[in-house]
Length: 97
Image 1 (cartoon, rainbow, N blue to C red):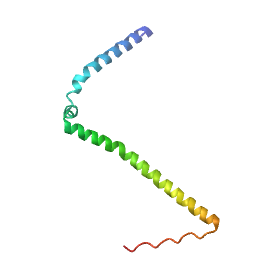
Image 2: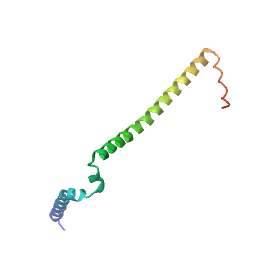
Image 3: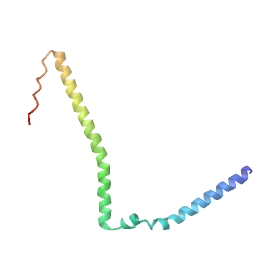
Image 4: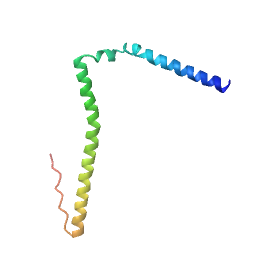
């Protein structure tokens, strides 16, 4: 097989894929989720779900950053007290409840 023949086969394959891609939207409209998503209630549910799925990871990362920052400040404060020679505050005993 020559290079020219291989190039011709590649172009034919690309043309065939483009033709199939143009015909696929008609087949995709048979998808039950695509058709059911046209109602107002379903669209609202998808929007709420999308917001929830977008905000949840951001909230988890934000909480982790907040905790780590708070912990770092507490450690820094303890180090400053130790350097000054001040006694660290006594920790309260755990509540029996």
